[in-house]
Image (cartoon, rainbow, N blue to C red; front, side, top):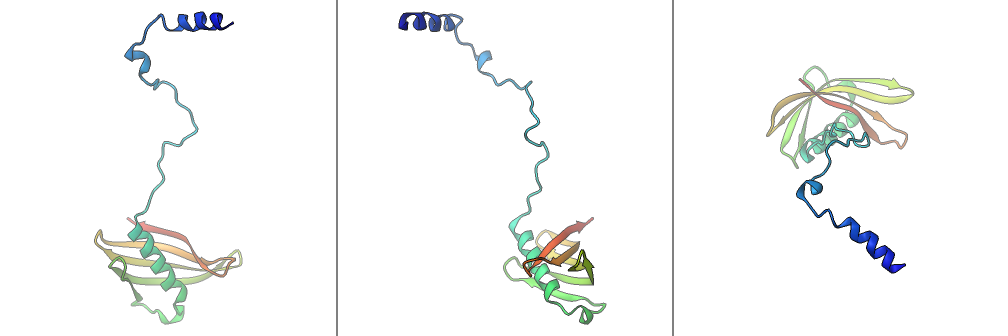
Length: 132
């Protein structure tokens, strides 16, 4: 039995080894992994987004006025102004939409966002996107 296995395995090695056999086959493509990479935000943007969310959620909407209200993140050095805060109800949840400027080392950009009071009674950023 051992002799039969050894003889059959010896036949596999008679062709020899070539580098062409070692190259990966790129013709095989599966759909298991998306080719679109997810957008990964840097830590400074995530931190600024949380700072803006906290400022919007704790603001007295009626007191903001046309000039808006300032925000600053000491951890990133970014700052800006929050304007146009509108309070609504979305499926029974309290939400606030807003626009915000963000002055950072990357430049000055405008953002449009919405934060809502979730089931756990904590504010969650529902949307936060840079306006191009």
